[in-house]
Length: 255
Image (tube, rainbow, N blue to C red; front, side, top):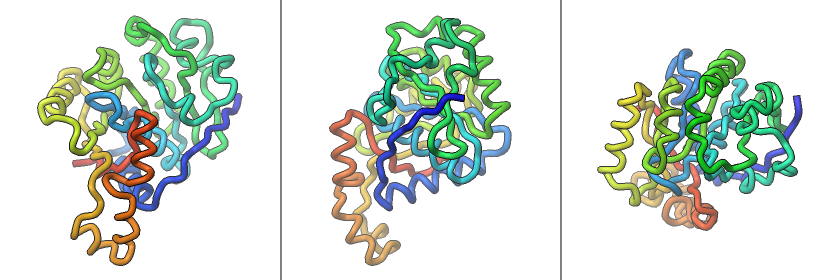
């Protein structure tokens, strides 16, 4: 199996703790919840950051996990995590179009137990490929091999791809950017998931305020330290905003 080296950003302590809570909640979703969709209602809510950090943490906790990058129109993982020579390697698009076999597009990484089916080359209209039985078979085979299949999809409100992908998953976590996503859009996303029979595992509130009285009381002296990160997670949040996708600050994934 070929290997990809993926660069990971170091997370601020508060973000790392939030991601750990999400990982634990995912673990309690049950043994039959293997194919997990991470999506959002609209772009720039932080779904890709949540997906890749959740995948990494599950692997580090000892669970064989594979990340499937199905945001085929606008993937950010390749550039954000500096995957070298990406354009020369077979990826999910190669498999879906029949140019490669499954074993050719699964890569191990420098993180033990962490595998990835990347999107290296963007596609203008992948809908027909995602509707093909070949994609469903890929997810099923991955679920037989790995404990968790984490799927990063396009936003539900942008293209029809996300609903098609959701129909093949055991459950979905919806990433919502605090103070940005409207209730009507969130409700619409709930309905889309329900219509395709995908269980909503929970909502992940991203870039939530961490400077409130209750937060500081709980973390004691660390509350002041966290407050320097400002709204969301401060400097890290600003960097994430500049990169067009959010930084994970999940509330939970089982409520």
